[in-house]
Amino acid sequence: MMKAPEFSLAGRTALVTGSTAGLGKAMAFALGGAGARVAFNYHRNEARAAEVMKEYAATGGIGGMFRGDVSSEEDVPRLVREVEAALGEVDILVINATPDQPHRAVEEYEWAFYQEMLDFFVKSPVLLTKAVLPGMKRRGHGRIISIGSEVVARGVPDFTAYVAAKGGQNGFHRSLATEVARWGVTVNMISPGWIPVERHAGDPQEEKDRYLAGIPAGRWGVPEDLAGAVVFLASESASFVTGQNLHINGGMTVH
Image 1 (cartoon, rainbow, N blue to C red):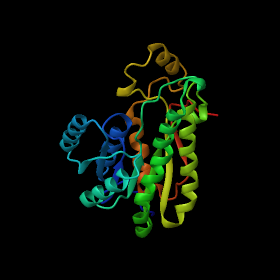
Image 2 (spheres, rainbow, N blue to C red):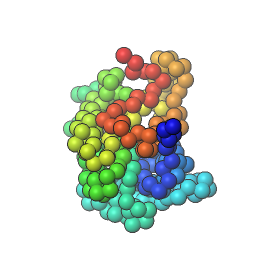
Image 3 (tube, rainbow, N blue to C red):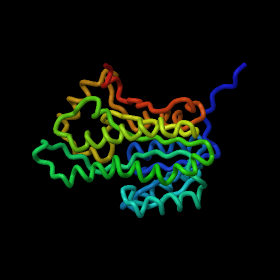
Protein backbone atom coordinates (compact mmCIF):
# COMPACT_ATOMS: atom_id res chain seq x y z
CA MET A 1 0.00 0.00 0.00
CA MET A 2 1.26 3.47 -0.83
CA LYS A 3 2.21 5.76 2.05
CA ALA A 4 -0.37 8.44 2.87
CA PRO A 5 0.46 12.00 1.73
CA GLU A 6 2.49 14.07 4.15
CA PHE A 7 1.21 17.44 5.34
CA SER A 8 3.63 17.83 8.23
CA LEU A 9 6.09 20.73 7.89
CA ALA A 10 8.25 19.66 10.82
CA GLY A 11 11.87 20.63 10.26
CA ARG A 12 11.02 23.29 7.67
CA THR A 13 11.52 27.03 7.96
CA ALA A 14 8.89 29.36 6.52
CA LEU A 15 9.16 33.10 5.88
CA VAL A 16 5.81 34.87 5.51
CA THR A 17 6.06 38.53 4.53
CA GLY A 18 3.54 40.98 5.92
CA SER A 19 2.36 38.51 8.56
CA THR A 20 1.22 40.52 11.58
CA ALA A 21 -2.40 40.94 10.43
CA GLY A 22 -5.04 39.62 8.08
CA LEU A 23 -4.28 36.89 5.59
CA GLY A 24 -0.56 36.83 6.31
CA LYS A 25 -1.06 36.26 10.01
CA ALA A 26 -3.55 33.43 9.41
CA MET A 27 -1.21 31.67 6.98
CA ALA A 28 1.79 32.07 9.28
CA PHE A 29 -0.14 30.55 12.18
CA ALA A 30 -1.29 27.68 9.94
CA LEU A 31 2.27 26.90 8.84
CA GLY A 32 3.39 26.94 12.47
CA GLY A 33 0.50 24.67 13.39
CA ALA A 34 1.75 22.19 10.78
CA GLY A 35 5.16 22.15 12.47
CA ALA A 36 7.20 24.74 10.56
CA ARG A 37 9.49 27.24 12.21
CA VAL A 38 7.87 30.51 11.15
CA ALA A 39 9.57 33.82 10.46
CA PHE A 40 6.93 36.56 10.81
CA ASN A 41 7.69 39.83 9.05
CA TYR A 42 6.63 43.43 9.60
CA HIS A 43 7.86 46.83 8.50
CA ARG A 44 6.55 49.60 10.74
CA ASN A 45 4.06 48.56 13.43
CA GLU A 46 6.35 47.23 16.15
CA ALA A 47 3.67 47.19 18.85
CA ARG A 48 1.37 45.01 16.75
CA ALA A 49 4.28 42.73 15.87
CA ALA A 50 5.05 42.19 19.56
CA GLU A 51 1.42 41.30 20.31
CA VAL A 52 1.32 38.82 17.45
CA MET A 53 4.45 37.08 18.70
CA LYS A 54 2.91 36.75 22.17
CA GLU A 55 -0.19 35.24 20.61
CA TYR A 56 1.87 32.86 18.47
CA ALA A 57 4.08 31.79 21.36
CA ALA A 58 0.96 30.91 23.35
CA THR A 59 0.09 28.32 20.70
CA GLY A 60 3.43 26.58 21.26
CA GLY A 61 4.65 27.52 17.81
CA ILE A 62 8.33 27.99 17.05
CA GLY A 63 9.44 31.11 15.24
CA GLY A 64 10.43 34.75 15.46
CA MET A 65 9.54 38.26 14.36
CA PHE A 66 11.73 40.03 11.82
CA ARG A 67 11.55 43.63 10.68
CA GLY A 68 12.22 44.46 7.04
CA ASP A 69 11.03 46.41 4.02
CA VAL A 70 10.47 43.68 1.45
CA SER A 71 10.65 46.13 -1.44
CA SER A 72 14.14 47.31 -0.47
CA GLU A 73 17.22 45.96 -2.25
CA GLU A 74 19.22 46.53 0.94
CA ASP A 75 16.69 45.20 3.45
CA VAL A 76 15.70 41.92 1.80
CA PRO A 77 19.13 40.21 1.89
CA ARG A 78 19.59 41.34 5.50
CA LEU A 79 16.12 40.07 6.43
CA VAL A 80 16.78 36.64 4.94
CA ARG A 81 20.20 36.41 6.61
CA GLU A 82 18.66 37.19 9.99
CA VAL A 83 15.89 34.65 9.51
CA GLU A 84 18.31 31.94 8.49
CA ALA A 85 20.69 32.69 11.39
CA ALA A 86 17.83 32.36 13.85
CA LEU A 87 15.62 29.64 12.37
CA GLY A 88 17.53 27.90 9.59
CA GLU A 89 17.55 28.24 5.82
CA VAL A 90 14.23 29.22 4.28
CA ASP A 91 12.39 26.22 2.81
CA ILE A 92 9.02 27.94 2.34
CA LEU A 93 8.62 31.52 1.14
CA VAL A 94 5.14 33.07 1.26
CA ILE A 95 5.09 36.43 -0.56
CA ASN A 96 2.16 38.27 1.00
CA ALA A 97 3.06 41.85 2.01
CA THR A 98 0.81 44.52 0.52
CA PRO A 99 0.28 48.30 0.72
CA ASP A 100 -2.98 50.26 0.71
CA GLN A 101 -4.97 49.81 -2.50
CA PRO A 102 -7.23 52.78 -3.23
CA HIS A 103 -9.74 52.55 -6.08
CA ARG A 104 -9.39 55.42 -8.57
CA ALA A 105 -10.11 56.14 -12.21
CA VAL A 106 -7.01 55.68 -14.35
CA GLU A 107 -6.74 59.45 -14.94
CA GLU A 108 -6.47 60.02 -11.19
CA TYR A 109 -3.49 57.75 -10.58
CA GLU A 110 -0.02 59.25 -10.61
CA TRP A 111 2.76 57.10 -12.05
CA ALA A 112 4.38 57.06 -8.59
CA PHE A 113 1.48 54.98 -7.34
CA TYR A 114 1.85 52.49 -10.18
CA GLN A 115 5.52 52.26 -9.24
CA GLU A 116 4.63 51.57 -5.61
CA MET A 117 2.38 48.72 -6.69
CA LEU A 118 5.08 47.30 -8.96
CA ASP A 119 7.61 47.54 -6.14
CA PHE A 120 5.38 45.47 -3.85
CA PHE A 121 4.16 42.90 -6.34
CA VAL A 122 6.99 42.50 -8.87
CA LYS A 123 10.18 43.93 -7.36
CA SER A 124 9.61 42.40 -3.93
CA PRO A 125 8.98 38.85 -5.24
CA VAL A 126 12.11 39.12 -7.39
CA LEU A 127 14.26 40.28 -4.46
CA LEU A 128 12.91 37.66 -2.07
CA THR A 129 13.24 34.86 -4.61
CA LYS A 130 16.84 35.78 -5.40
CA ALA A 131 17.65 35.76 -1.69
CA VAL A 132 16.26 32.30 -0.90
CA LEU A 133 16.64 30.43 -4.20
CA PRO A 134 20.36 29.53 -4.00
CA GLY A 135 19.78 27.55 -0.80
CA MET A 136 16.68 25.88 -2.20
CA LYS A 137 18.57 24.80 -5.30
CA ARG A 138 21.45 23.49 -3.23
CA ARG A 139 19.11 21.43 -1.03
CA GLY A 140 16.95 20.26 -3.94
CA HIS A 141 13.79 21.44 -2.24
CA GLY A 142 11.79 24.64 -1.92
CA ARG A 143 8.33 26.14 -1.90
CA ILE A 144 7.60 29.64 -3.19
CA ILE A 145 3.99 30.70 -2.72
CA SER A 146 2.79 34.08 -3.99
CA ILE A 147 -0.41 35.64 -2.75
CA GLY A 148 -2.14 37.02 -5.82
CA SER A 149 -5.71 38.25 -6.25
CA GLU A 150 -8.89 37.41 -8.13
CA VAL A 151 -8.88 40.97 -9.53
CA VAL A 152 -6.67 39.92 -12.44
CA ALA A 153 -9.20 37.34 -13.62
CA ARG A 154 -12.16 39.64 -12.93
CA GLY A 155 -10.70 42.80 -14.49
CA VAL A 156 -11.94 44.98 -11.64
CA PRO A 157 -12.45 48.60 -12.81
CA ASP A 158 -11.00 51.73 -11.17
CA PHE A 159 -8.15 49.53 -9.93
CA THR A 160 -5.68 49.49 -12.81
CA ALA A 161 -2.52 50.06 -10.77
CA TYR A 162 -3.13 47.14 -8.43
CA VAL A 163 -4.47 44.84 -11.13
CA ALA A 164 -1.53 45.55 -13.45
CA ALA A 165 1.01 44.86 -10.71
CA LYS A 166 -0.75 41.67 -9.62
CA GLY A 167 -0.79 40.56 -13.25
CA GLY A 168 2.96 41.09 -13.36
CA GLN A 169 3.38 39.06 -10.19
CA ASN A 170 1.37 36.25 -11.77
CA GLY A 171 3.55 36.32 -14.90
CA PHE A 172 6.71 36.23 -12.82
CA HIS A 173 5.59 33.22 -10.81
CA ARG A 174 4.52 31.28 -13.92
CA SER A 175 7.86 31.78 -15.66
CA LEU A 176 9.79 31.08 -12.46
CA ALA A 177 7.90 27.82 -11.96
CA THR A 178 9.23 26.30 -15.17
CA GLU A 179 12.71 27.71 -14.59
CA VAL A 180 13.30 26.14 -11.16
CA ALA A 181 11.24 22.94 -11.31
CA ARG A 182 14.24 20.72 -12.03
CA TRP A 183 15.73 21.64 -8.64
CA GLY A 184 12.69 20.42 -6.72
CA VAL A 185 11.43 23.97 -6.15
CA THR A 186 7.72 24.55 -6.70
CA VAL A 187 6.20 27.97 -7.39
CA ASN A 188 2.49 28.50 -6.94
CA MET A 189 0.02 31.31 -6.35
CA ILE A 190 -3.00 31.62 -4.09
CA SER A 191 -5.48 34.23 -5.32
CA PRO A 192 -8.09 35.10 -2.70
CA GLY A 193 -11.21 37.11 -3.28
CA TRP A 194 -12.17 40.09 -1.19
CA ILE A 195 -11.75 38.83 2.36
CA PRO A 196 -12.41 41.71 4.75
CA VAL A 197 -9.60 42.15 7.27
CA GLU A 198 -8.46 45.02 9.49
CA ARG A 199 -7.58 47.39 6.66
CA HIS A 200 -11.08 47.05 5.18
CA ALA A 201 -12.81 48.39 8.29
CA GLY A 202 -13.65 51.69 6.59
CA ASP A 203 -14.82 50.30 3.26
CA PRO A 204 -18.34 51.43 2.21
CA GLN A 205 -21.03 49.02 3.38
CA GLU A 206 -22.87 49.20 0.06
CA GLU A 207 -19.77 47.91 -1.73
CA LYS A 208 -19.46 45.05 0.76
CA ASP A 209 -23.13 44.17 0.35
CA ARG A 210 -22.84 44.18 -3.45
CA TYR A 211 -19.79 41.92 -3.42
CA LEU A 212 -21.30 39.50 -0.91
CA ALA A 213 -24.44 39.19 -3.01
CA GLY A 214 -22.32 37.95 -5.93
CA ILE A 215 -20.43 35.20 -4.08
CA PRO A 216 -21.84 31.82 -5.20
CA ALA A 217 -20.94 30.24 -1.85
CA GLY A 218 -23.18 32.79 -0.14
CA ARG A 219 -20.75 33.86 2.58
CA TRP A 220 -17.69 36.01 3.16
CA GLY A 221 -14.30 34.39 3.08
CA VAL A 222 -12.22 34.58 6.25
CA PRO A 223 -8.40 34.55 6.53
CA GLU A 224 -8.47 30.99 7.84
CA ASP A 225 -9.88 29.86 4.47
CA LEU A 226 -6.32 30.14 3.14
CA ALA A 227 -4.83 27.97 5.89
CA GLY A 228 -5.32 24.57 4.31
CA ALA A 229 -4.22 25.77 0.89
CA VAL A 230 -0.94 27.25 2.05
CA VAL A 231 -0.09 24.20 4.17
CA PHE A 232 -0.87 21.88 1.25
CA LEU A 233 1.24 23.84 -1.23
CA ALA A 234 4.11 23.99 1.28
CA SER A 235 3.97 20.25 1.98
CA GLU A 236 5.43 17.16 0.35
CA SER A 237 1.94 16.32 -0.91
CA ALA A 238 2.28 19.18 -3.40
CA SER A 239 5.72 18.24 -4.71
CA PHE A 240 4.33 17.76 -8.24
CA VAL A 241 2.16 20.89 -8.20
CA THR A 242 3.82 23.96 -9.69
CA GLY A 243 2.94 26.99 -11.79
CA GLN A 244 -0.66 26.93 -10.55
CA ASN A 245 -2.97 29.72 -9.42
CA LEU A 246 -5.53 28.61 -6.84
CA HIS A 247 -8.51 30.96 -6.51
CA ILE A 248 -10.06 31.00 -3.04
CA ASN A 249 -13.18 33.12 -3.40
CA GLY A 250 -16.31 31.01 -3.03
CA GLY A 251 -16.72 30.61 -6.78
CA MET A 252 -16.39 34.25 -7.89
CA THR A 253 -14.13 33.36 -10.83
CA VAL A 254 -15.78 30.19 -12.12
CA HIS A 255 -15.70 30.36 -15.93
